[in-house]
Image (cartoon, rainbow, N blue to C red; front, side, top):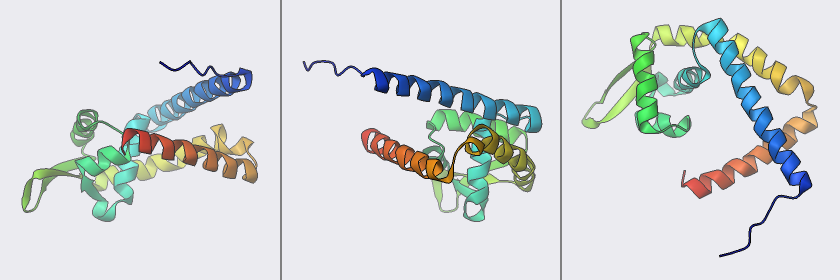
Length: 155
């Protein structure tokens, strides 16, 4: 068994700063969307990804991968979105095994209405305090982290 590679002081401070900032960022975005659009951030992301897809549709497998969700968690969320009339599900023509999620016109209207407040909150809690150089650095840093996580998790 190899020896534990403990975090040094700077790494520990950075790690905790990241943890608290990411938690508070997610909570802030979720609160804003709940307050202004009556939907959690997770549902907004599903609607937004569908709104950007060709024909506003994609398979549930593709959608789960894109929003970083398990199939069962996504299925539960999409069922809630279906109940609101924002998404509908159906089988892919000629492939009864594949389920396709499609954003309805009502769902598109809901995400379009929520988007301005959401982007304003993203700007307020993240980008307004950063310089353009810091934005580039943040992109590079999280791009490297995401690449590592994708390769580690087989995504």
